[in-house]
Image 1 (cartoon, rainbow, N blue to C red):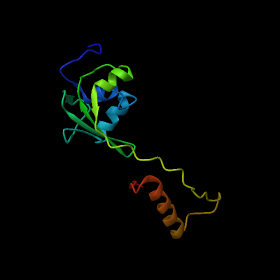
Image 2 (spheres, helix red, strand yellow):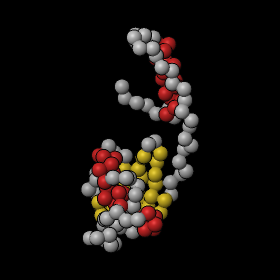
Image 3 (cartoon, rainbow, N blue to C red):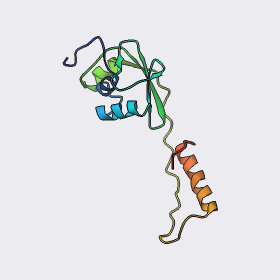
Length: 134
């Protein structure tokens, strides 16, 4: 299939073809990590999508919601890709200015409990309260 409309396509290939992700491997990794939902269910990269399906994906802390209008299996130009989906995403969050992150002097030792709490507080402000695994 060379870019023409098909009955169904893999979800990772479709998201790459319509430029939701820059690379197909990034789309596959998002599926593997559980960041992609089709009609409310987490799916693997090989799950097929059809016109009318709703795809929700998390990209850098922002939820992107698109509805499949046309099936594409090959990457196409941006104007054609825009016609293949209906974007119902909320506007992306504003980019916050880089916050001042204090640098510790080399050889200053481990951070104290007070330092650690301040680092966590700054990280929460910078990343919008997302939790990270340590």
